[in-house]
Image 1 (tube, rainbow over the protein chains, first blue to last red):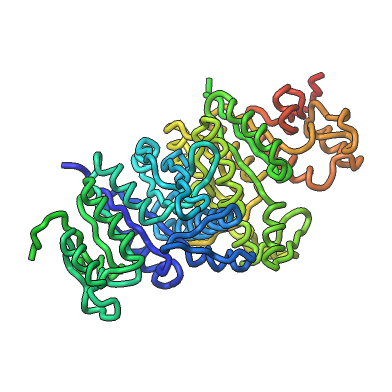
Image 2 (image 1 turned 180 degrees about the vertical axis):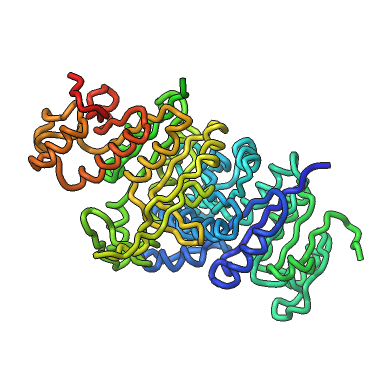
Length: 263
Length: 263
């Protein structure tokens, strides 16, 4: 029996809500056993960029990251947001250690090739170095990863936080029973985004395809769920998506890697 | 015989000079055995603050850190500068891990009491947690500390990088032969700041007092040397101050804890 590991990803809207972040960090802090956290910070980065005269440019929900924008996301993700989360967790008695993918060479990425769109300094994950990560976990530390990676040649890269969480879950699934949680501002994946009662309790690839076809699952939820299913297929023990309360109550959306609906 | 540990502090002027930083990181990267790096970033923080409409305020060379300024220094030190150094070292094959004092609860500080001056969110070091630091060193990692600490209650604090380097050297001197290097833009502590030939090769407390009285050693050099002598007195095996080339050639200023001049 592998030891459980909780991988908890918190999204931008949670980071923007001071009280919700406190509650979410308290929930995470109380999770037993080994765990790590992954966070974004895109909204704050967009605001900071604007303050510095850099207008955010997005394509299909992903940030086009020129050199000036890379500086902004490194400052905001690895600096402001990462250290805010770490000091908050430390105050709760959770021995957090805040990192980027460059630290300990944990997450190696390559600059996305230019096709129709030049995303600039955006990195696609190539390898996760579980050795340095494991050393931290073995030391009783709780890694907190921001969405910055590197190419191993001195270039920092901007990488989607949902993707980082999935890649870490996949890399660690060999050693751990990897439980992945996507914590965001909704109670789960919903049939109707305006109806909190419409949370889809179980979602398998077939249902996912059907909801996409209907248009019920759309936009930003698609890359998130693509990542989530990829992690599940590659060995993650469980993947759940929803807000802190739904996750705590076991009422968030649970992804299921089967063609049979388990209810 | 204790194992040697190199503690290397690089100052703001080195960080500002792209080529010099590269060379300095290469020199650090080639130091054999266990090592860690501490860096500042004040000049960049002042520029970034100004870009955001926050005028830097200093008192006796120390930054007055209100809430907005704290955000700037956290962004610049823990984000921009720390990750730039880490990715640079990684490219040289040095397995760096970039941290603040909040990470792994490594450096606990308390907000400086308000006396004549309210320094704001400035922290005086209270304790160094060598356990988490040792775990990193044992894992073959090279810690890179920025000049941010925390109070353990969720508050990040701005702490002078020279002080952090000294405090780390003192805390680690029990276990290691701690060699502390203050790497800055001058070839050493100088009798005449405009004459590169006037480097003081050996400096003991008595000579230091005399140079201060003469006014030859003044301003920013005083808190640096106070820190350096404090570390030496508290058990650091050696302390040297100078630029990369002088340190490499063993021609920087070496602090000596004796009243006898060794030459």
